[in-house]
Length: 124
View 1 (cartoon, rainbow, N blue to C red):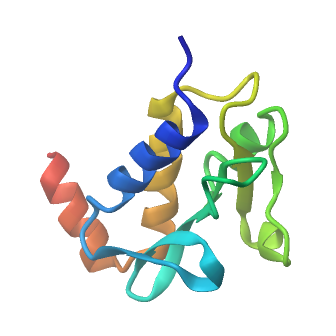
View 2 (cartoon, one colour):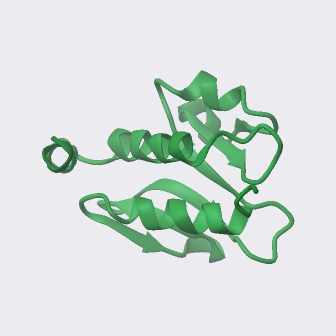
View 3 (cartoon, rainbow, N blue to C red):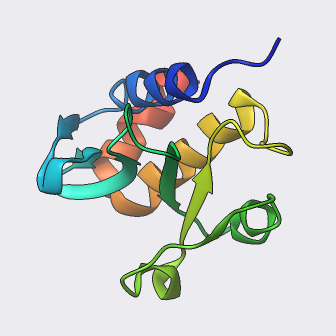
């Protein structure tokens, strides 16, 4: 049985908040994960919206993410900087482990070298 989009979203948000210096904020009525005041994952408005998804800033995985059915460069010009929006719960959605990898990659692109070093020290 597939996990619901809202459960996947909640799991990814909880995961994002485990990174050094990460915090949750709600600008524009949407949930985001930030590090040093910079957003590294957009979680959208969530419940009650027709589509639940995330937007992450990618480099190495950008082409892979854009190949997901329904994925697209994030609007407002963010796509030009490597941001990609992926809807959750759609056919062809990557497994949770891949989505978590993308959240981590996005964190690594936005966080300071010191915080990335703290993350690396945790995993080794």
